[in-house]
Amino acid sequence: MKKLVSLFLVALMATLAVFTLTACTPREEVLKIYNWGDYMDPETYKGFEDWYKEKTGKNVTVKYSEFDTNESMYVEVTQKKADYDLLCPSDYMIERMIAEDLLLKLNDETQEVVKNAVSDSLATLIKGAYDPNMEYGVPYMWGTLGIMYNRLSEGLNDEVVSNWDALWNSQFSGKIYMKDSVRDAYTIAMLRENADDLIAASANGYDSTEYQQLLNSIFTSTDETKIAAAKTSLLEQKPLLRGYEVDSAKDDMLRDIDGKKGYLGLFWSCDAGYIMNGSEDDANLNLRYIIPEEGSNVWVDGFVISKNAVNVEAANYFIQYLCEEEVAYACMDYVGSTTGIEAGMNSYKADLLAADSDFFEGAPEGFKEMYIEMMFPTEETLKRCAIMKDFGTFNSALDTMWEEVKIS
Figure 1: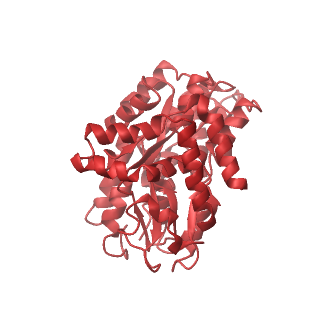
Figure 2: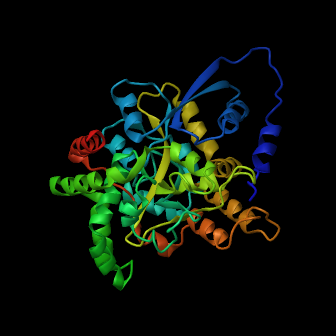
Figure 3: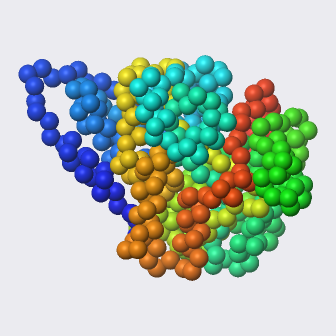
């Protein structure tokens, strides 16, 4: 399988490479970006420096730093007062930061650019979950949460991992990866706890009122009883795990071609796409990704402007830059996940499905269909997914539960 190469971005950067020097050199500015690890090509954020110069006539230097969890990012902003201009939290954390007045609204021009660029279906999800007026940021990447496994490992197939209980199956003891993320771990534990009721409710269709109410209750509210149930479930799972991880397991599964080490686990679709979207010499085509039948999470990671920002102007321009079709395409190609920018998403999908595309060359039977569904979930799939909401006063209880699970 061969990685798509963004000729769009190459051409864009080439046109911006040469500028006429003026008698007065503009003062150089700094833009501080705080993003997830392995989540943007350095060529992309460095390319913004030329794009910004063309737009404003000013010089800017991007200083780029990485975090590993939403919670660690939150601590940097709230307790250490870090002066990052741009942050890239997930949906529920954006909701929390808006409520706590930790973010700035985009300026009017940037809001208009974002609203015109984001796909309608994703905008509808965002407005219903955490940013009702689309005024705080731009969705950078979005996708689902599911199980990734190595098809060459004994006893594993789509049927076996069709429900979340696969991650508690003692048959795979020592081979299971679990996300070191309190919200993801809690949510999956609660989906497992309610599996029978969810499956029974889905008998009338995933869009039935009964199913939707039950699914959304898991993502939007909690209490002490639910947190205690999740803790019991996660403690039951812990002895079976190869380990908790955030980014390391995707590289482990990429290199472990035959699945002799850890060979299944909880993964964001961007993790799966990052591995499967490699070059022909750096991809593991034995991997598969599936969303269990009980239901799952639609996640959205978006760029927002911190209340501690120093360079608000450049931060707004960077968000506009991310809305360019060529830039969105390049980001999607690098990350292996789905951009929230409709033009970039559509052009990427068209290239994947083109008759002369060699992207799926050498892939096993069924891989193409699985990959397209993972990257571009159908409406039927999205009916059994919901976006996480902030739990407000129960956040601290949830954090305490998770720490007790990990140190037990």
